[in-house]
Image (cartoon, rainbow, N blue to C red; front, side, top):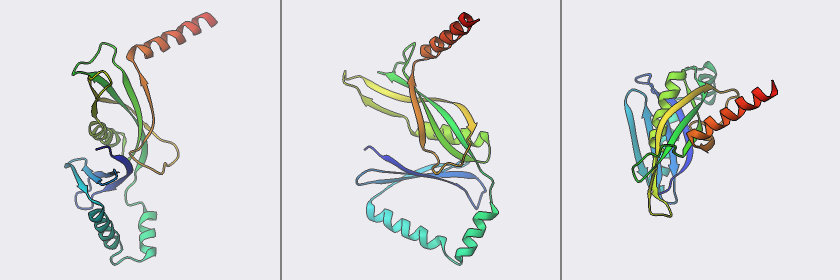
Length: 193
C-alpha cells in the first residue's frame, strides 16, 4: 500500500506537556493517522473513508465546545507554547540484498519540523526517518532497502513554512561523491592562488 503524505501537525499534549506530532497519509481506500509523543511513543491507525469522516467531524465539534471565535484567535495570539521551525537533514542508505556497499547510494532528505528546541526537532526527525524506511525489489530481483542512517544536521529555518514534517528537498549521492566534490573545490582554490 503506497500512502501519500497529506499533512503533519505539531502539538503539545495538554495533559503531559509533551511535544508531539500527528502525520496524516492516504491512499485511495485508506487514511493512516500516526500520533507521536516524544516521551510516550507512537501509534498508527488505518481508517476507511467513513470512519475518517466521522473522526474529523467529532474533532471539529470538540474543538469548538465552549469557545467563541474571539477566544480561539486569542489563544493563538497568546502563544501558549513557543515553537521554532527547523530544517533537518535525514540520511538514508540503500542496502541491496541485506548488504551495505562500501560506497552506497545515499539520500539526503530535508524535512521541516516545528519544535521547542534543536534537540526536540532532532528527535522528531529521527522518528520520522525510521517511519519512512522502505523496501522493494528492483528490476534485477534484488531487495533494495532504504534504511534511515542518521539525522545529520538540524538548522533553524528562516521564514515560517506552511507545512511541518514535509520533505522540502532531497538529493542522492555516494559518500565518495562528497569527497570528490570537496577535493575538486580544494584543487580549484589552490590553482587560483
